[in-house]
Length: 243
Image 1 (cartoon, rainbow, N blue to C red):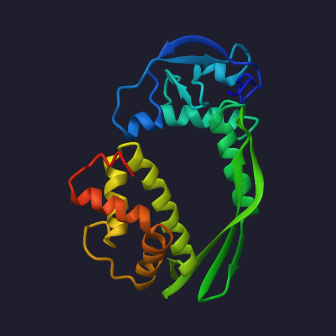
Image 2: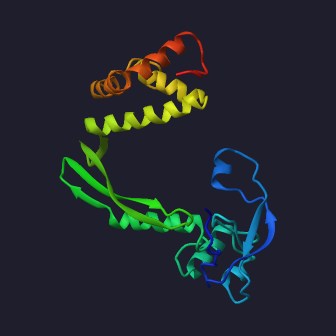
Image 3: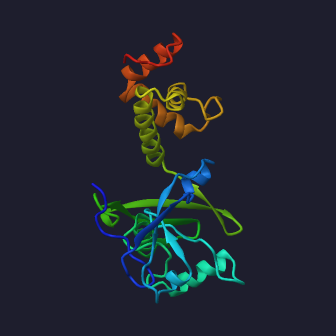
């Protein structure tokens, strides 16, 4: 299912209309250094709106651009003007994925509970999930617990209990096993490192609780599967088609 609500201008809530197509670069395209695809450009039809005056453009995911900023103003300053006129406080198109995601993140930050116990900081963050067929997010009733340990001078580092490590590695095993079945070489290499108890550099894992967690996951609960994966690898059958 896809989102059925129309995109709206954050400055006046008018329905946005597709006026053209252009090569607007998304964050993923930028990170992956890919040539931007042609995308529909949405614009506000309200001639009294600041977004109309500034010739603002949105794409389907809600990201915003100003094609040509007014004279004497750069793109950053022009976008700041649109944000100042926005009724939502954001430049993202209303009802878009980006707008819904930012609202969810804001709500998550407001609902996070932090306990400073001097030597440790406990943080409880509510978990959200996206409603199928929409760009809205709701609380699941579950919470994520994070522990930060003091290392002096007001600095803290992330601290993991044994059960944090265990469930983290269990998720890795399950995810990499699915990737292995799909022929993903990186996933295959990662699950083999777990089975061989190696770190990301291919050296033997020295952290005690990580070794214990991996032992139970690979050689107690999934012994048969791990043994077959290791055997096929030793035979240089990289595709591991039959398990």
